[in-house]
Image (cartoon, rainbow, N blue to C red):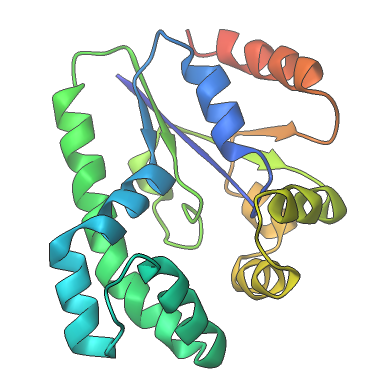
Length: 188
């Protein structure tokens, strides 16, 4: 089994690359989907309610974002709860799919979390900051949130040093698909 970790900066196109790479052929682990699932879980909500006095309502995630924008250290405390839960899900996913030839993992903070040794191949999705901001804003998010989250990540140049492959995502979806397929052939 080959474990392929796909990472990159905020709004660089990691999810798109991961979907193209896995196609319908290889199992795909999407960290963002798991985090959304965690945020909806009663276990997480109870823990956050007790620890940070955040009200668990329909806008639970917005409440957390509001608190984080006022208190930057809160994000690190929340990550200490979320990240171990995501890693547990990664282990379960790997165990469940251990007979598959290739497993694809989309992990936004793979380098920052020092998880490089967990993957056989690491692919970095690179994209210009202006384009990433444009994508982020299209999702209905704010410039302030983009700048806050982007500053917390390592610069692309530092991350690339830990990666086996780099895919530039500054052009069309057609070109991106072509570039992913070229790299995918190296591992099939």
